[in-house]
Length: 193
Image 1 (cartoon, rainbow, N blue to C red):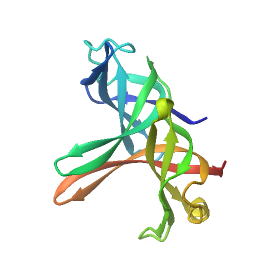
Image 2 (cartoon, helix red, strand yellow; image 1 turned 90 degrees about the vertical axis):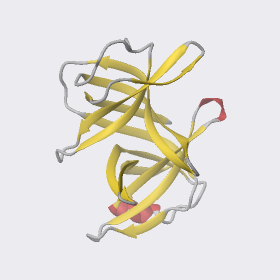
Image 3 (spheres, rainbow, N blue to C red; image 1 turned 180 degrees about the vertical axis):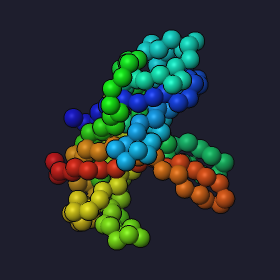
Image 4 (cartoon, rainbow, N blue to C red; image 1 turned 60 degrees about the horizontal axis):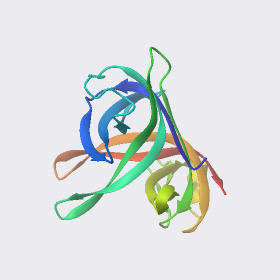
């Protein structure tokens, strides 16, 4: 199970070149996935030129993506920011289907869980999950656990292996007068490995 993402949604941005490696070019786009509540999560996706004709516009097209949730550190001026995205292993243009935002991860807690309550009194625990990938690399994925799961997760220690299922969540916040977007995994199921 390690790291799997399944998305169905609409492409909302044109492809933009990120980098090339060994004759293969990788492009960023964003996919809008509608929650049951009607709110949209806009998910960044990296796709190879081997999966799409990069000379076409796919803006507004409906797609099915199978991939992995990945992170990297972006160096901005004097600080690092953790960036989260979906690396597409498969991508198909589809006609119609219900929106899907399913993520399954197995990894290790790499920072002590932070337990708190929302202003509405709901229990919440923040966890950073280290998920291994090929060639000795790892992705560090911010996860948010809710309710009873949050209460249980608060007592887990660094190094604990857990499996989680949830969805990629995007949320906007304001810092220093600037609107920014944070991405995290909103967990609805968790089990200890």
